Image (cartoon, rainbow, N blue to C red; front, side):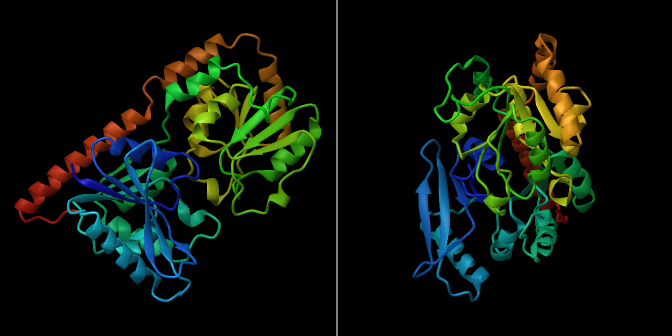
Length: 376
């Protein structure tokens, strides 16, 4: 099997999400090299190479000196050194960040995959050159996947071999929340009802919504799990009924979820959330928990349209939806609808479908090459 080189803007040990789910599966039958963004401050440039404890994924952290000159060239040199020292000869390249193409465009992979999981150019502190880098990457990519339907619609005219793969789920992992009765120490003393959120807390987080809702219902407890990045933690609402429990491991999430009454997706509606497809939506549902979300396009369609998730636009609507949910005594029919919807959804299926499309693309490329035709 060809090795796989993955270029990611997310660190392997940050938050367990789409890149980790897919790369762990690829690593079952091939070597996977997960290359993170560089860390600065080293005395000299070098690659830090480690192996994930639970998989065969090799994690590569480029360390660069503070010399700001020719950063792309130095990253290219470290990349070439990696291929040489690890004897990487036949490989597939997989991109989450177009910025990596600036120092890796010289590679000659058997297949170039762009898994466009987010519209990174809309995120805070996005490099000004990101859109140019993405255009170059789209020109060279053999196949493109998108992290949701809205992102697919935004990109489909830019490539002729593009497919939508919305957020998927490890159902068995989150089903555990339905049966768990253990309460972690930092949550067990908190009162009910509990409304919870886990994930990265950043510029997408609707601070005003949480501020107003928690103030209007001081008897409700709001629990937030995850790292705070790109925003000042002091700007987050601070109230006795708001609890920030910090980052938790992926394995611990079902334990925390099991103690919540309602799960939240409290994102602002702006350019940074226009194309997102939150992985937590099906995860919350698999845990058997009601979900209240703002009107994120890929949550509204299909989850809101199927009445699997409450869609709200204000603190008043959030409170009303929560009160309606609290009044529901029998959730059997709703849970049956949830399980029917999730029945064919899994990261294993997503992986298998992606591999099938990749194989078809490689076969087409071989045929075109033999016939002397140009191909993407």
